[in-house]
Length: 253
Ligand SMILES: O=C[C@H](O)COP(=O)(O)O
Image 1: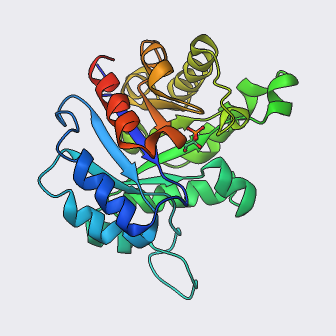
Image 2: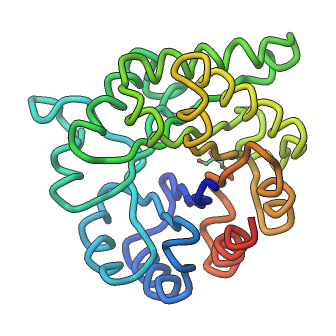
Image 3: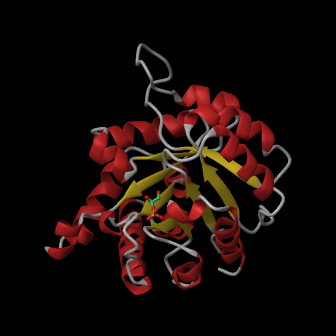
């Protein structure tokens, strides 16, 4: 039985005051951590204070990206060592917006995933196809390739601890959700690929999230699917009420 992981990705939304107020309100409402992993991936600027404010609660704080090097002359970047030093447990790697606007590639995603493990962080590695790729029937091969390249060189143990977020790019922030069946089919392809790259045990352990216009109205159906173990949520993670509902849905998955 895989533990569901519901993660909000705030992207570049919220001021620090808004973020702190949100976390203060939600931290007492997050489910038992032995049943659901509840995560907010906040802007880097807020991580230290939010991490301090969730101490002792079941709400966890994650980062939205990081550099692959431990340190160096990389103006504006944050390193895995810096995140680890703050006690941040999760980091999103290779979100489609990072791939699209910040030139991240499967090769850089792979370096970052390795760096995350080196510093004790759990990567949430994003994969997903464009609308054009879906319409041309290449979703499966695109996603399989992203998974193979992203996990390249990881040990079996590391691979089993990686969280993979399947986010069809055409469903992000558009209100268009993949049907639960379609999302499950691609998550199944991902699990099968992990089995081929490693083995069945690793494939059964790895957690796969769906992301793309997830909201309280559709999360239960998505989480009811065999291969969907959680959600990576943008818009609906910005309001306390809807985020808490998403976390509660994790309890019934
Ligand atoms: O990381 C989250 C995804 O980009 C989904 O965003 P969305 O829930 O606003 O569609």
